[in-house]
Length: 231
Image 1 (spheres, rainbow, N blue to C red):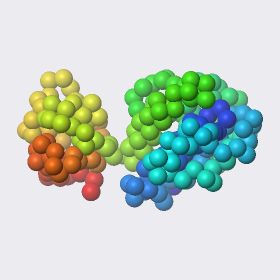
Image 2 (cartoon, helix red, strand yellow):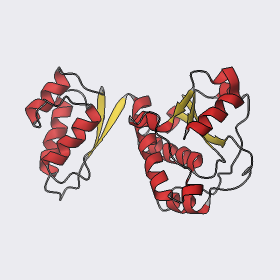
Image 3 (cartoon, rainbow, N blue to C red):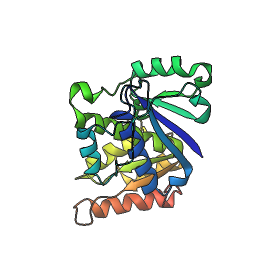
Image 4 (cartoon, rainbow, N blue to C red):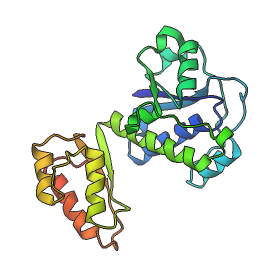
């Protein structure tokens, strides 16, 4: 089991959203038992308070129950209880390092680093008021983090309208070289011999009535035949 503590400033916006989103993603992936997830703040000024209403409203709109979550501060000896201390920005990384000391060495991470955005920060929406943006970035980081811990990459084809968009998704998430072709033969070559990111893959398929759905089905079969599909 991997034990994860998400950390922000007050534990009323970003870190509780990450905690609840990550737990929901793991549940949907059938991996809920693989993770213990919690969140905390580097400040105790919000201790005991619930999730800030605008963020709570966005989470509840996704069917996520926020009723039991209450803010709490990060405890100095807590690094020993977790495998990963995942922060939202440089400020909380610095405060976390000071609070947990040497016990946090090698455990402190920046959430958006998992999404390939090294050093990028998720701004505190309590100040910016950009709650939708913060939640989008948190979700992106959590999804990439789950993939990284899973050893499995999620390829989201659900919004692809055509082949060009489909291969753009594969190219980005799998790290294809520029010269790789955008066709089924190229996909087979990538999966069976050419370098790429990921060992196994989950595919989120487009709706059955989408014009690209039949072709996406053929793509899925290539992944399956190559032994790379997580089903």
